[in-house]
Amino acid sequence: MSRAEHYSWASLLGLVAVFWWFQMRLLDGVHIVDLPASALLGVYVTVIAATTVIEIAIAAVLAAMSGKSTAKDERDVAIDRQASLNERIFMIAAINILIWQALMEGVFGRHPYPRIDLSHLPTLFFSLFAVLFGGEIVKRILTILPHRLQTSHG
Amino acid sequence: MGEGGAAVPKGRVENAIRQLRTERGLTQQALADAVGATRQTIVAVEAGKYAPSLELAFRISRAFGRPFEEVWRFRPE
Image (cartoon, rainbow over all chains, first blue to last red; front, top):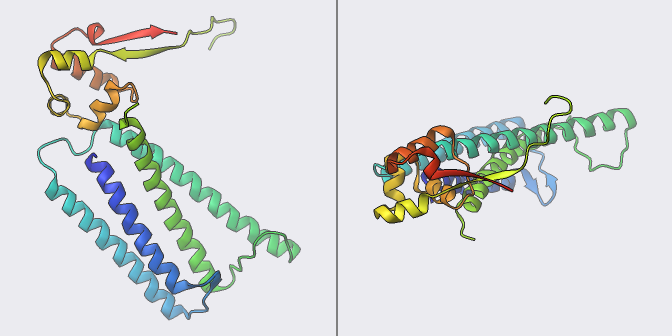
């Protein structure tokens, strides 16, 4: 495994762990808990701090582990570029789904799609953060996959 | 593309890296270090699963001390 792939695996696990904690705080089953804005601010600060600390720790550990070998080469950059493009496509699609259902809600009141009440602050907070987490997780997965496929035998 | 242009035949770029590397007793890591790439990239290039940039292709040829066309060849399909 290259250093870029190690980073992607570690970062993916870190992101999933933080998202797990995040959804435990915000969700009760499939319903969003009615937390006050101050509690949401606490969740926001915790998530940002946790992801920042995890990313710094991963980068420091990998830098300490790697020897004199090349850490990142043109293939890593190409894979990263493609994964970033796919992350952007995912996020555009997800934001458009939110916009679409909000418009349907406003125009028709009732619609057949799952209801996401974006006028409810915890729901808006959860939806936007879920899109951010989703985009990052998609990027990590789409970084790991080509690394695995291009170096697999057969 | 101009109108009426002939269709470009498909093909694939093949390389003799594994053969040249074995002849010289070079490991994938040693070649990777010599050309500034990761070992995984050498694995992918040898297996034909990654097409390197022109610069890396030239670096690999120079690492073997062979002309470009001896390391890389285009095989029309």
